[in-house]
Length: 224
Length: 224
Image 1 (spheres, each protein chain N blue to C red):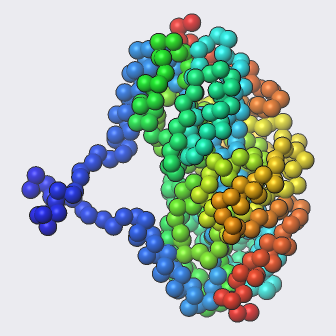
Image 2 (image 1 turned 90 degrees about the vertical axis):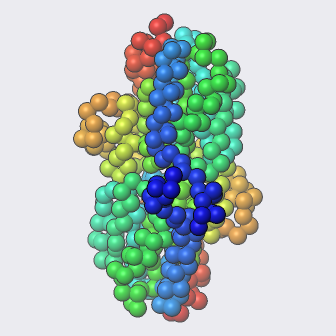
Image 3 (image 1 turned 60 degrees about the horizontal axis):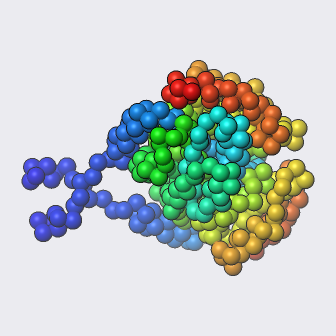
């Protein structure tokens, strides 16, 4: 037994280490007046499209950067790059969520003196990303109409920690049997502090109220 | 240091333990002539609805049981129960996938002498479930049209290990810009052994070919 002990490494629990790292990010961004938004939701819920539409509405007023989280590939980062926005592609090589350490390392790629707002597109997953703070000031959770109106009940953690919940693809309400009022009630039962936005990134419906919400939240930090 | 050693537990790695457990399930089910199907896909892709429609088509011929995996709640298990089908609700309390040990324990709840087919509805997640075999004979991955046609590229592991890929909500092709041939090519580029089925659980379109595929695969085991 004694001889085998050298192989035993005692490591800090991941959650604790992640918290330290998340706090370090918060300190850095506070000192640089940068506001960080973490966008989460299922695969195909419309995270990239929403970020693109938000960028279009915000880019004349603020300097924006994006971190694109994906298990593999860089198709989304290419879309953001084509808008002339600084973007870093973070490939997690199979991991189902982004951890704070990755974001801390990525901050070095941006000129934080110049940037006001950073969007992070988390991995498409309703479960794991909710468990890991990544130094963000604002969490946006997206649920799209085709996914069904039972998702808040089934995946409560993500929605209970979100500052804003976007009901996306709202133009598809005509095609699907989705009770948006029930979903809003389910969210309110989890947390009184979350705001619900009915949006279609495709038609632009509802987008301006989310833009106003983000500007309102970010203004103390950005000082513009 | 010496005094603290009693707190150090050396545990087997999860992946290895999971493989042992998965193999044990395979042995048990082989000896009982039971065929096990693992159904995976995003939240809202239509896993429950597909399982329900398959049950309706198969239940007069085979004895079926279901394991409903959810992080929380039991709404899906109630739907299955109302069909008169044996069902066990597995709540993972936050975990993003099902592991083999849970399935091994659950087998004790079923009368395996009587059962021919077991469906497992995995947690809604395109990432983590793909990493854990749970003793299944067949893996079905579902991708629904509203999720978008870039998902195979972004989440390759799940689709590369699936025996069958269901393009679900195919009746929604008229509402979305989804290139099903591109998706089929992406799948074929990952694996030559996967079969692609274009299905709508709502209209019943394409369902019978998946039923035939399952019966064909299961017939050596079930001996009916």
